[in-house]
Length: 362
View (tube, rainbow, N blue to C red):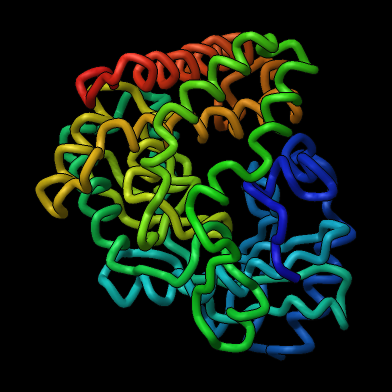
């Protein structure tokens, strides 16, 4: 089923925040059904299923298929979402460009034999870069330029339409088809709903929400894109596997969209700090020409991304986490620090947009 009416899945789905706050929940029920299903489907070539360590909205597992390690994700929400089909189509295109991504080996969204969708993808034997960041071991001077070049590379994929893609089209083998006719339509989708949520939950007040809308509308013409590019839409150090000096694999493409070239760059700014983000933007600019009005478009994307991320963090209770074992919380910090960072980065984007600041304000 298509994600019609969805700006970002985790906060706009019918079962909002499903899987975002209960990652430690026992998953033995899914494990048994999954083991039975894949054993019947693949026979003796499938073995050694065990729970994974993911903290996202999917249940994750490791196993062996044809003697090789594989990674498995399941989607058990009430919406019967089929976006795993989109992810398979997107990563196939990105892999063809030479960007290291886990390719989909098999998936089934039918829910005929088990009450959830599942996906088997390639396994990369590396931890995520977030682990290294928390320990102060990531060499940003080496890795940031690699990230910038990778983002530039996957923007070679220029899908039809804008926003989230049609899963129905992907399952029919028609590739990546955006569900919206314009980027402006997608950008504004659920914007009022998200701002109202933040006001209702006392994260911002109504005057601040009005200020955000005014800043966006003052630069609304920048949303009129002729054609979108492939956007990961959740690019961050926890979705990049690698070593202290090398990004080895870009994972979790299940939120990808067709959007603005500045979107993924802004997302790195949302989750990294200024010096690192500037290195990423600089490397991107050397690999691909920056578009016209790149700087205000960068801040427009940053602002919209901070809005939906604030909704998720408030709604899923992330600010109430107590330790840095949670992926979004920095080393030695807690949920209150995440709240401070979230507020700071929301204000940073808003001020930059209002004052017409450039990349030097990152």
